[in-house]
Image (cartoon, rainbow, N blue to C red):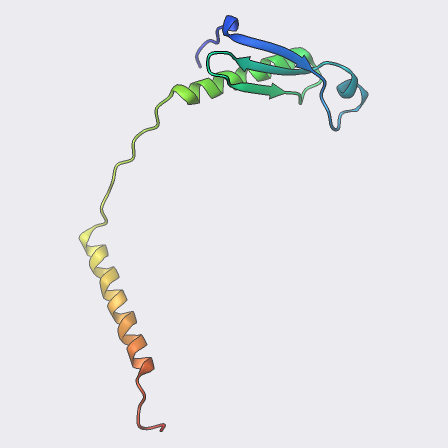
Length: 110
């Protein structure tokens, strides 16, 4: 991963919510990290320690920035083999013949 420049990051602390008891609800252990050049925001409140939440948020932000700047590998267009096309068309033709036979009325039952 690339090293994150901390001068481009705005770190703010907040209270967590939800399950976790008094420590989570009273203490400012949650961390919100905003990358100023891109505007990406990452939030970490799942741990009890502010330091652990800060480390988690910074690593998530690095991961997001890495994914933002990596180019996806272009997909190669492929054609199905001629034999599979031929087999598929033969199967379709046989299915159509079977359906036509169902729709014809025979004189035996009339």
